[in-house]
Length: 257
Length: 260
Image (cartoon, rainbow over all chains, first blue to last red; front, side, top):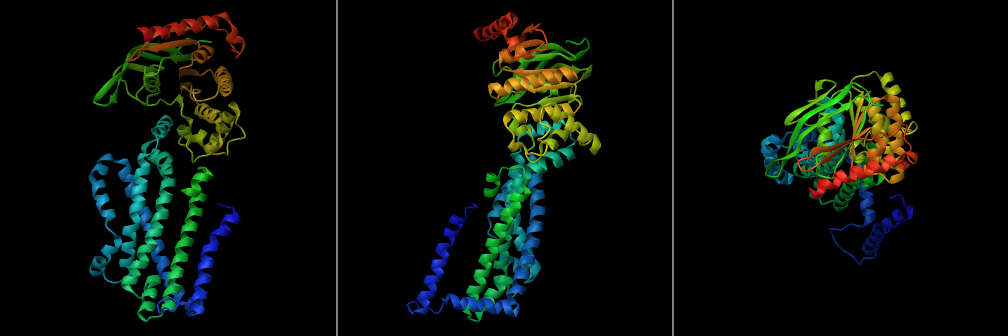
């Protein structure tokens, strides 16, 4: 993980690909209308940074993603706890949960658009809908995986039911909850960008679709790269956060968690 | 060593536990008493209901027949003056809490912060872990984890200590050390101790009395007072003729349970 030599070798392939790509386009070997040269993409990227378009799009997507994640973590976490703790509820709703969560959020977009209109709250609702499932599933499973022994410890300490929840169950579920929250964030980002593509012009997805409609190929690539970088950064940041939030867990476990 | 007041009084205890296709009788007509300040070891082969017996004493499960009383009061839920040390130390400590906060768990709803800190420090001192309070459990060896459990019991002001094969998963050296720690702590606090073990030497070395539990459902077939002098020593006590005599006696009692 922290081995600098190995980390450096990880960059060899992308750098080589970009170099080869630039060389192929520059030398006239590759002549495709749909594939711009890397230097053109870089110029387009500079343009959108200077004009402030990129910042506006990023801000929109980020606000929706963060809000959707927060709501999904709270709602999905609470539902997961309830489903994990109450066998009757679990037997009643798990079948429905399994059906609902497998419906692709993308397939719901036209319906959401018709019902709610092309507004940011529709995008938010779609992102929350898709992001709550991993939270719900991981938390519900984690509640059921709490070792019986920990309940024994809680009972010997004569914890009340609320204290048992607070002292034993919730902390025992936190590692799984953090993993669920990480998945929820990534899914919220995906769905937000996709919804923006459908509902242009806001956000990274909207900006990309606008560039596409004006046949500005360099700009399409520039936004696509930004989306990739945002996804990568969010994932790396969440990994760190999860690790920092779990001091009681062995380092090897938390990095891979 | 043995006090006069009665601690536990177990009369005609029977326990059924859920099993595939209904329930299974795990304990049948178990009757014995434990005096305050006494150390009682329970030995038996696996499947004779040793752990179930201890859980009934702890109030973690309810008897189907008979009665368990502690200091005259019926045990229906974990009594305030009872603490338990579990065998599986990996699950018996809360991994997200530091050692000190694991020891404090029984105190949090009942004591002020300062009182808690003092008690935790004292309890960790008793088991020789005064400098490990800030560590998380995954940094501890098995022996240290069991000491933390003992410290947790001490901090809770329990006068009764129940231990389910507390040293069973430890190597021989660590085991001997922790046996000394336990005897030392018991001598100073006068706690009543009931522990389950499958190690005859351990049962003899620690106990005032050894109960042999046999059969399925389990019942107490033999009670043997050890009558060994205290304080006990890992080498000297084990070299006494009485120690060997007890070992034969208990070995015989356990063997009969298989033949019969």
